[in-house]
Structures are given as structure tokens and as C-alpha cells.
Length: 200
Length: 122
Ligand SMILES: Nc1nc2c(ncn2[C@@H]2O[C@H](COP(=O)(O)OP(=O)(O)O)[C@@H](O)[C@H]2O)c(=O)[nH]1
Ligand SMILES: [Mg+2]
Image 1 (cartoon, rainbow over the protein chains, first blue to last red):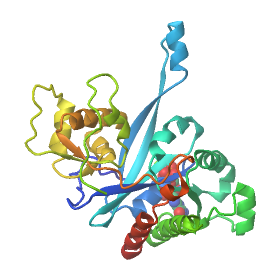
Image 2: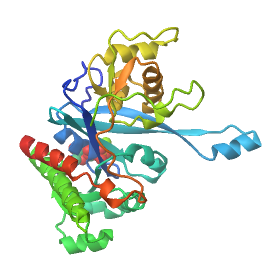
Image 3: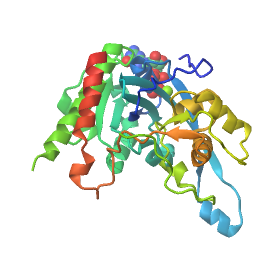
């Protein structure tokens, strides 16, 4: 997908007072970049975070240097929701080797949309476990490919071992309306949950 | 949401709290005509000041300047400490540790604002 990194920046209106973010996650090739692109008002941007892995403290003690660095590419987009508020969408890789970065990436997030390709459902187990462990509110969005076989919601819930309160949504990540519907349904779920939990 | 905030402490030491409060979505803009005094600004600091004449998020700065996010956080932290950029406070931190009281974790009004915005744009 074309990236606009080298183009003139698209600035936010000067009236904007703050931003929120939603993560879009899932295994490689599931459609994260595509979904972010369908939702974003700006051509999606790409940035990188580097990560130093493997027992730095132990290395120091034994006098060895041997830090390994991993680079994570993040695709992201933006929606100006109203003159005061912007929403950023971050495509976040859902592989275990990136977990060390997750705390920082997810801090302050409203939640995450976990894209699932039901043709290779097992590839999503790690990321769903990570979302649960980190306590990040999430919905599952099945990205429907041409040869995706239809499964009932209960079949999916069982196969993914999801708690009853995790919404299961469907989309074609390439389609703007479908992508918007997923994001709207997810935020509506967050809102409804928040309202419920406010009640005594 | 209130006005721009200054970092709570300027340590001048190795630990810079300003860096740690910066998120990918923190919004940054250059303070016009700010006096950075004797501070030595490197080329990357200058590029950030030149880019952020208007509001951009940390992640956008990193993408446009082809710098890693962690580097941009450090550089923006430096500029913030110097008063050369403003950083808007986060719209919220909904996802908080479980020990935070329930009521504080649930800004329904913010979620509603997001929802209304999305429905209008769909
Ligand atoms: N048919 C179909 N193809 C899709 C859909 N979403 C993504 N793709 C394609 O699947 C490939 C991987 O998508 P991408 O967004 O790069 O995945 P990422 O690795 O999760 O960012 C690309 O070639 C997309 O064009 C979809 O909903 N339907
Ligand atoms: Mg991608």
C-alpha cells in the first residue's frame, strides 16, 4: 500500500484538544493495514519502533554486550471526529516477539480490534491471549476473504475460546462502510459496557 | 481536556519524566518564538520544531521525519522540557490498571463523543 510518509504533512485543525487511539491487531496478513487504510482520513503512515530484547541486566553483570534489537513496523491512520477530538488507529503486530512493546503501545488505548482470518484461526490464539492478559477491551472482527467458510457465532466463540462479553463482528477490511461499521459497533460496545458498569 | 501542560519536573538528569508520559497519540506543536536559551539543539530537534508549526501526533512526527518512535519521544521530551513545544494532555486513559476504582475507568462521555463522531462520518 502506498505510504504518504514523504508527502506534505496533513495537520490537525488547531481546534483539536486531544486524541484517543484504538489498536488494530492480529497475525501477519490478516488485514490490519487494509482496515486502517479504509478508516483513515489521511493516507496511512508507517513508523517504526525498535526494541532491545534479552536480559540486559544479566548481560551487564557478566560483562557481555549482546543486545538484540527487533524492529516493529506500525501502520497508522487518523480520523478527526469533531473539531476538538481526533482518533488514531494503530496497526499493531500480534506476534509474541512484540509483547515487550505492547504495554507502551496500548497505554491509554480505548481498546483493540482483533482481526481474525478464520482460514487460519490458530494464528490468532497468541494475540487474543495477550489482549486478555493485558486487560485491553477488545472485539474480534472476522475479516472475510473470498474462500472464507461461514461459521456460526457459537462455533467461532468456542474455537477462539472467547468470553461471552467479547463481540464477534464481521467485515471486508477493504470496504470503508464495513470497516466503519466494525469500529462503530466496537465503540458502541465499549460505551454500553461503561454505562452498565457505572450502575450500582 | 484542558490547556497544554508542562512536564511536572525538569530533572536535568538522566531520568526525564516528560518522555515517559508521551504516547504515540500525544499531540505536539512548536511554541512560536520560544527562547531555548543556551540549550544545544541538534539537527533532529530543529527538524521537529520546523515540522510542528501546527498540531501533529508523536507517531506522525516519527513517520514524517523517518525516525524511530522512541527517538522522537526523547527529542520531543527535550523540547518540552525547554518550553520549545507544547504537548496536549491525553484525552483520557481508559485502559488503566485494575486497582483504579471502576468509576474512574469509565469515561462514558468520551466514548459517546467518539461514537457520535464516527456515526456522523460513516
Ligand atoms: N479478499 C480480501 N482481501 C483482503 C482483505 N483484507 C486484506 N486483504 C488482502 O490481504 C493481504 C494482507 O492484508 P494486510 O492489510 O497487508 O495485512 P496485515 O499484515 O495484517 O497488515 C493484502 O493483500 C490485502 O489486500 C479482505 O477483507 N478481503
Ligand atoms: Mg500490515
